[in-house]
Image (cartoon, rainbow, N blue to C red):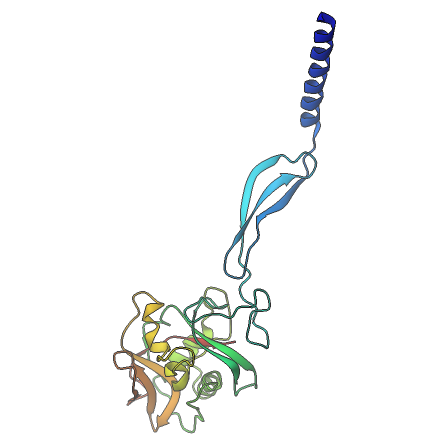
Length: 254
């Protein structure tokens, strides 16, 4: 009986020594292992683990959410769900408008499905034109899809036009370079999915939304520019002079 006990003790000791030796001799080959898969709107996580002995290094990282990838059918090609009003868009702004059948950007014929607006104001209060510029025949449109072309037209005549230039140069949290000063319809359009004037009712999406007159890229006549007063969103108003400082938010379409 004693011999049997000694034998098992000997075998157990060898196993312990072998195990310890193997751990000491392991030249760790660290690999990242995904623990939680990311989705379009939620981040995932991963840990560092040895591919040889499965030991964890203690290092972990988050995996950035994919972000929706909108296909020609208006849905996300990854999760098959569309953005909702109020979602954060790919540019880091808030989605204020969507159209299932799409709308055309007149500058290049691109079909887009969404508008997103910057969470923050662009500058403080900006004027439409720079100090010594006299604009004529801007050929600015007022409808959905015209804002990007309007912005380019304004800057071709007045390269230092404060509002248009600030929107054009805005990059947002995700470094997108296609922001523009919205047309009056893009500024004040009513969403077909929610009966509201989307841009001026984004107070429920943006905390501390600044109230006041917002400037569009649409010219009315002479030196008058269309704008919207967030305190009275049902009506357009004209800003009587190119040089009246107004609130500005950039918009992008995708």
